[in-house]
Amino acid sequence: MRSFLLNIYIDADACPVKGEVYRVAERYGLDVIVVANSRMHVPGKAWITLEVVEDGLNVADDWIVDHLEPDDIVITADIPLASRCLKRGAHVLGSKGKPFTEANIGGAVATRDLLTGLRSAGEITGGPKALTRKDRSLFLQQLDQIVQAIRRKHNGSPAAEKEAL
Image (cartoon, rainbow, N blue to C red; front, side, top):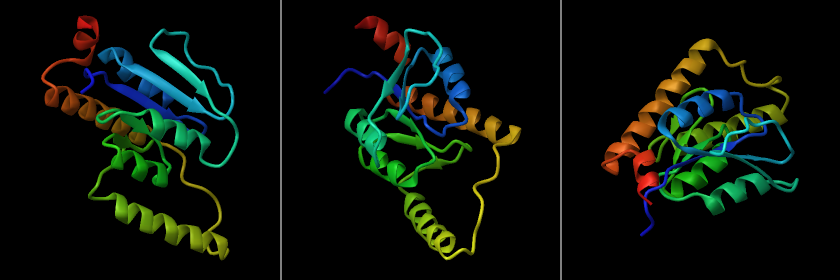
């Protein structure tokens, strides 16, 4: 059994809440791994790592799934990735603040498949609505709640446990 070390993985190529993740991670002393298919700017902090993977279908997703541990947190809007991460015991949060759980992932997959079909038939055009201030606030609140729940589960702060190693 590994020592408890909580990481936050960001599926970063289209993630609009990286700044919010950095704020929460800094507050709790957590490491952040930003996974992308191309180089991007990340703050020059020792606890933030940029992992650039090859281009290709699901390469970033596969990297995240291969590296995460139970109770890590994954930030993504990618529903198939969310499902894979949940199966590995991770906590998954969408960029609009909606947690993906075992209870709701089936419905999310079904809705995604339905919308994909409607888009391919030309019934739906355009992308998702822009992120609002309310969405960002909900995201911050949900991420904080997830971190707090994991800390309670492990009876201590991740930062204190890292220092003890």
